[in-house]
Each structure stands twice: as structure tokens, then as C-alpha cells.
Image (tube, rainbow, N blue to C red; front, side, top):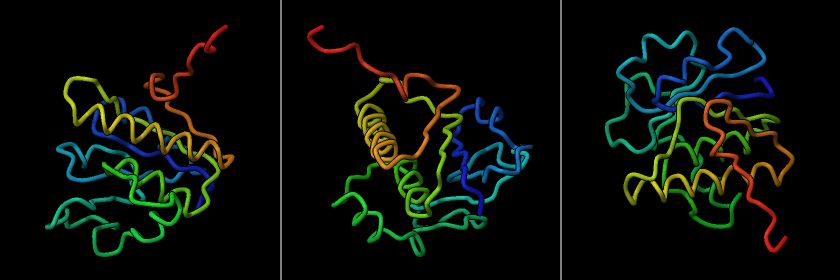
Length: 148
């Protein structure tokens, strides 16, 4: 296992992930219509489907839900990316890079997913894990100093 992981979403910018850099493990999720075009995949997650992708490595049956909830002190997950970040933390990765995801604020569920992913990002950062989102700077956006 490497110490760095690139987590791929479904957007085309996922193809900018470091596929040639063998220091990264590459994880993706669910059923991408272009899955065969992804140059390298080390793990496929499909934890929300009752009938998971037949190629999935991590499914409802073998994801460590109890350990992930213990990690955060409760069930604070509402999307696959958040579970993937928690899994990377549980496996003691030192770096997490997010590619191919953008949580547009176009409908309420997406807003909640965006918020949840940011919570997990900052939970990871608080544990000393480097988190980057090279194709979507809003995921790591810092705020202006309050009151200054």
C-alpha cells in the first residue's frame, strides 16, 4: 500500500489524476460510464448499491462502517466520497488527492454532500493528513479572517 491516494469522482477532470505516479493508489466509485478509459484503478467502491458493480472491491458487505463511525464518533456520512476519505484515514494514508468532483450548489442534496466532504477533508487535515483538490479549489477554500 502506498502512503498517497487519489480519489476519483465522475467528472472528466478525473483523468488529470497521477496515474503514472506509482506512489499513489487510485480509487474510484460506483458505475462510471467511462470506467474502461481510466488508465489505472486500484480500488473500486460501490457501497450504496444493493447490487454493486461486479468489479467493485469495497461494497456494503465489506466496508468497515462500524470503524468509520467510531473514527468520527457517529454516523456523519451522506455520500461515497466521505466514506472513501474515512477509509483512507483508517488505512493511515498520509496524502489524499481529490479529482473529478465538483459539488455544484444546484440542488439541496448536492449542497449537503459538499458540506459532508468538506467536513471529512478538514477532519483528515486535523489528523495531519495532506489533502489536495487540484481541479476544484473550492473544496479547500479558506475563509477570510472573521472580524478583521
